[in-house]
Image (tube, rainbow, N blue to C red):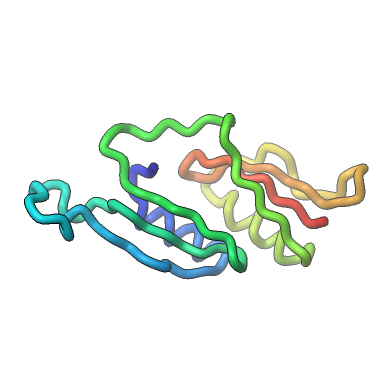
Length: 122
């Protein structure tokens, strides 16, 4: 759920590559009140290759917590570094993207929308 699914989806596409697969607004449903017509009912995007995220606009304030995180794993360290840097713009870097004792690169951030991302390069 999002306060502004279209804006959030476009940020993820710009940060990670991808595209909008489909977008349905409440305005496409008969009898929708005028104030709700532009709100997103269903939105799907691909990001970072073949990963799909589903989104919708919320009618209540959205409150993200660290109890849910999105994890992305990359084959290339430069792609992972770029994704980490772009997603962290306007957000908060929790753990810098760096080599880890277990042999992978890992970083964690909270983006400007409040979503926690765990970025890994194996």
